[in-house]
Length: 382
Image 1: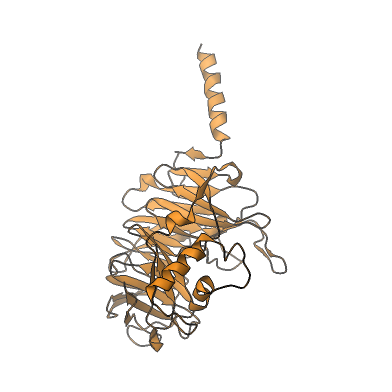
Image 2 (image 1 turned 45 degrees about the vertical axis):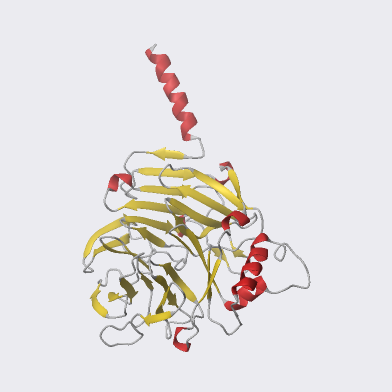
């Protein structure tokens, strides 16, 4: 009987290990996670989302077009309780950080390019949280801190052991920065509210990314919950700074997915492997898009509470979001693209016939707004 029970146990474990979603509860010191959840794209169930259901109560918010607040290449967009926080980065020499209120009115600049006290030589990244009361700016070899009015608070160098911190975010207890495989011993560095280093996470063993930085490596936070996209290895990390036993990794393990041991780019043919191309948070869900070389792109929803992973498609053409907050989706659109959405087209296509375009045209006509090519960016709120 004992032998029979052992055989049954082995069979059950074999089935579990070969399922598309495998959870290992053993501690993994190399990545500091308690659960390693492996995902195969081909095994995911697919849901269909109706565009019309998303686009209820659409609001068009044009950003004020004062010259010093004009945006040309937005890198960071965060919705706060009282407005919109943007990092415009057309080039390192003219990068700027801007605040608009929730109606699109220009409020203030955060810091400035320069070599003086409270100025930054360049901006690797910048962040705030939903309250938006303090802002962190990561520059060359140091972090700088400002309040929401743009007043400089403090700065601190972070040493020569890790010169390049390409992503940053704000937590409820301080700040967190990512190095994106520049040769540091750790990918994530945790700071308190005074910018003192208090912890290092995700050891790399000195891994150096000889293929260059990856913009897909993004870090986002919700209180003390940290979400980190390891684009080079096709994985997401969910880290709870208040409870390390809840840390998880969601790892896409299909052969087609990018990993650090594969050539990343053929400069004549484009990307060689499928890779994560941006994500945002929707409550406890990670919503990401995976670019695939020889197949349609894939939208993925990962529930970090239940570990359920599903694929989804829209029932018609639909652009991507930039942020989700307080029950609403937010899209940042340049004026030329916005006019493409709402103008009349001579020929019909899936784009012109899409529910998104139909609804946006209707809302724009009834709004009384006048958007032109020389206008500033527009925020769409659903």
